[in-house]
Image 1 (tube, one colour):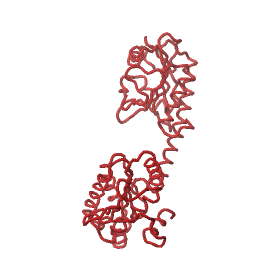
Image 2: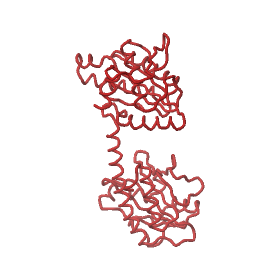
Image 3: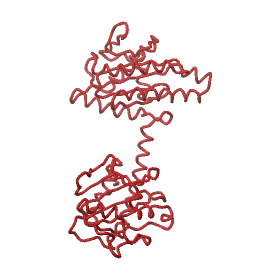
Image 4: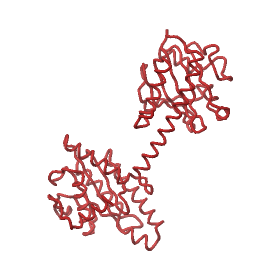
Length: 372
């Protein structure tokens, strides 16, 4: 779990490790969704029965079908220490194997039926406690004909559940660190760091298979006036509102990344959709931004490998082209996006086949944002 890079990898490592340690043939890790009153399976591993998936989209079970887990997952059990694991079989609870003192004599009919239905003979169930609250359960099973789990197995499963809880806590901390590292705190959009990383990856993919990569760079007009006349709190609300519009328009392009670069500058990165679809989404953004109560619309520049812009050898060049197009849109007070490589009355041309001069405004703007 410590080596896992994602939450999915972490829970899979926990389930697979517990299955190996306990000599099981199947394992699952489930989370208790309190607000929905259900156990939702995060991962299955080992010998999967028909209908089971490694990472199910929506495999869940009402907690009331498993009365013993509902009792154990109650906070009063957490207050008395870590709840212990117990064993069940396809015929009912294994005599003497329970650690839960209030376990019903008849056991869980839901679990027994599930074992029989999936060709398994027994299972050990270990509640997971995280941050002082019941979080979910670790479940390990063996196929029919194999030895039934015993008291020692249940005790070992209790230890494994505690180790799993520690691993989940670490994963949550890492996920939070990643979120903070790649998220703009005001708008909740991606930040410049994530854009740089994704754009580099996208351009590499373009070089490998010709995938269209498009970048929209936006400058929100009128923010300084709002800040100076109405205060920065109102300016922040304008930024948040525009960020929501950008997110809404970005949703028109499957998989698009929307980000705040800093200050009043935003961008949208699309990988795959044709350039025309990206320009259409940028046009919709311009239209909606012009209708905001505050601000003065937005200046949008678009650069796409699907346009006649020459070879894009680096992410830096695509960003420079989009940035230059946005600068032209701002200077012309264009109500529509300016598209690098296009010309005509509705699509002002931006010709940047070669890099702009070092002293030019486009180059200065890009360098300051990139390096500052």
